[in-house]
Length: 94
Image (cartoon, rainbow, N blue to C red):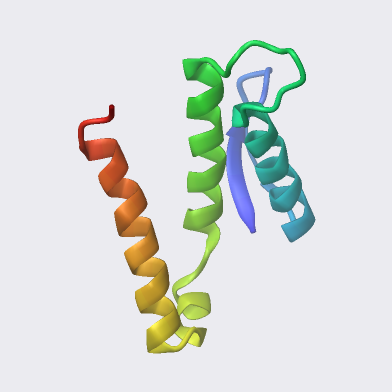
């Protein structure tokens, strides 16, 4: 998978990252937003937003070819799950 990122010198570069890198980023993002942070304060807005950025990066990296490998039932299940989760952000939370 390739991602584009701005580096400190203001130069845009393309870097290659592997599955292990994505897995590590998601694990780190998950650790930031869990309630079990060993006495640390609850996650703030920036941390939550960064977590969604990691999730979005991962989802965008899945190619149409990879999605096509899934059978219709798997795609339906994933679609239903993602739709339910997206609805949580558009609905009223209590």
